[in-house]
Length: 178
Image (cartoon, rainbow, N blue to C red; front, side, top):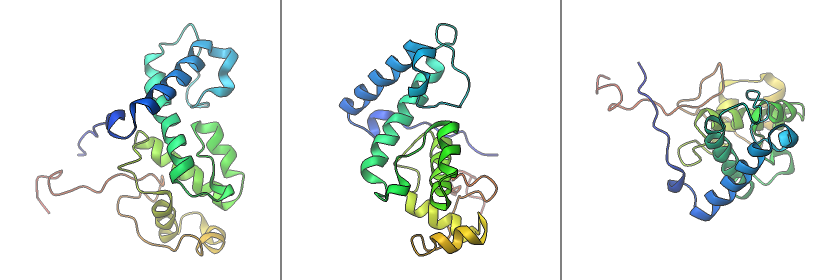
């Protein structure tokens, strides 16, 4: 049995100015609804319908996604094939079509989303990519093309079937019964 993960408050990861800018952007996008759907940071995850859907369920995840993309633009790899961080299912699927590096980027983004875009807890792109290659995910073409950039190295907590990362359980999580 896994303990419920507690979502880290935004103010622990970002400045108030960054949070305010992302909130303003996301609120504008969702209030415009269908007319601004192309700007939806989580395009492809659910079908938001302006004027009908409750904004609360969409705003917080979208703000987290926008903040993570902005953080990744500065702190992630600067290689052109690894920018920008894709958000939402549609962008992730598009990234996968851009070759092996794009697939790696899409998998990282999905794993980051799985972790509520917690950029402090989630391993870096580099660590995540090395972990994927260590597990042999994506086949020999992926390994052959990317192993010089991301030397295979095991990443505890990386799920081989989903490529999502979860923090490995600690003794505290399992009551110390190791």
